[in-house]
Length: 189
Image (cartoon, rainbow, N blue to C red; front, top):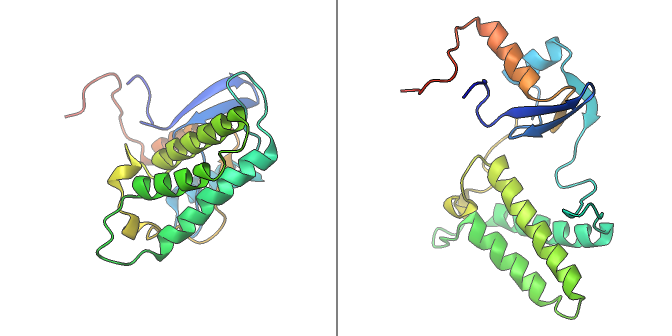
């Protein structure tokens, strides 16, 4: 690649606006080198994000009604809470299978709703699955064990801290700290 960062990539769209692809938040403060570097260089915003909260839009730019978003996010949050409780060694479901099963059980109970509402709910589910895949750094939630869900522990402190000008600024700061020579545009072997 012609840049550092791997899946971390910030697209600048103006002097004060950016879009993060890949990593977008710093999770935890205590013992977190990324946080320490970002904090010491004043790279973090005071604004904290909340997973799955905010305005959702269709590809046409229409905002999805909050009650539709909340319904879907609540179903998926409930399914996640169920995942935390799975301990039965005989249960060989993946996270992807478990979430899909719970969501489609919910969707089956929504069959009296308008077809457009059902499409929006399905689109929100698909967004959630893509977001979880990226958030868990995997190609498929079907490769994650449902029994092991929730064993990752964040460092103590605030979660979902937003970089002021994108996560790539933190990657640049980390590179400055190690003072390493980086060769771009060549194969890594």
